[in-house]
Image (cartoon, rainbow, N blue to C red):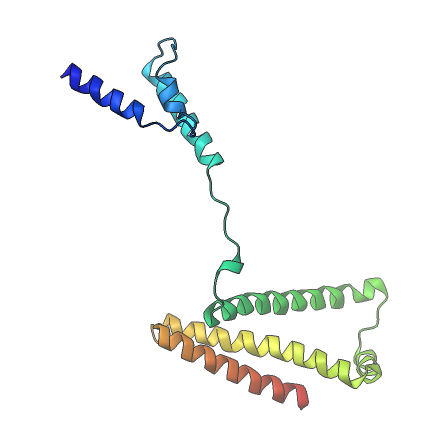
Length: 179
């Protein structure tokens, strides 16, 4: 049996390519080290494994490797419009509450004169941006509520409800912007 192990080791040693560096684990077997307790060996091996994992950790892929899908885009838009709607409502409330302390006049006369002084293309753009964000977030929220009932959660249902949300958003944005 000893001769079989020796013969196997010799055969394996002869197959090592000289162009490749020798693995650290095979070199470690020939280095004399002081004896350590099992706890020290386990602690050292865990530290070695953790260090090896840090060095060999793959770089996380960015969104560029994924094919854009409607569900991905609508999900990102839903989050972004929610942040925009909530952030603008918070900002408006804060400015309106601090207006008397800051000496700002935010009465109806001042608001009407500010709207009247705004050029029509800018006004239409702002109306489209605000109404589009509000209507999309509202319709997509309804879509999520429908999903919570267990309906339209198949791939086909998710895609179809996505098209419904896009169509309803386009109609509502057009109506709210122009009228």
